[in-house]
Amino acid sequence: MPIYDYTCAACGRRVSIFLSYNDYDSAQPVCTHCGSNDLHRRVGRVTVSRSESSRLDSLMDSSSLAGLDEDDPRALGQFMRQMGQEMGEDLGDEFGEVVSRLESGESPEAIERAMPDLGNEGGLFADE
Image 1 (cartoon, rainbow, N blue to C red):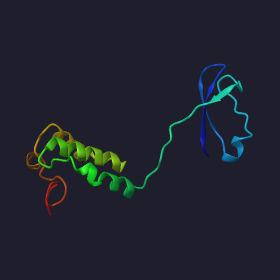
Image 2 (image 1 turned 30 degrees about the horizontal axis):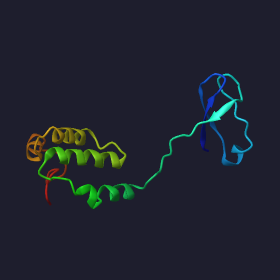
Image 3 (image 1 turned 135 degrees about the vertical axis):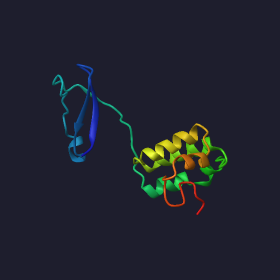
Image 4 (image 1 turned 90 degrees about the horizontal axis):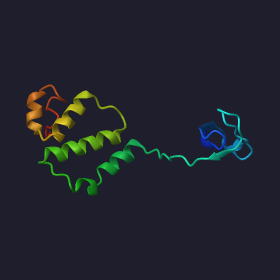
């Protein structure tokens, strides 16, 4: 069921009301705070759901990779942070630590030496 947001003209408070699409045209929404029916519809934020594949495809688009300097730890860290955000899930404390260290300018090799158990057998930055 969609949530419709209103502002009450009487008390000035924001009100969210659940209405089905069928009920929207005939409903008479009432302020849950003061009982007034003098509500004005607010235009809410629109969220577009994208599949994981679509998010990753846009991240791997050649235009987003064009400016990536693989020899610059800061650029690599920023790219990894963006990738993590696109994934939409928590990638763990180790990932966050690696990204922060890269963004501060630490080399991938130094990070791998400091965190030998990171990633898989070949290490996080392995070219295999």
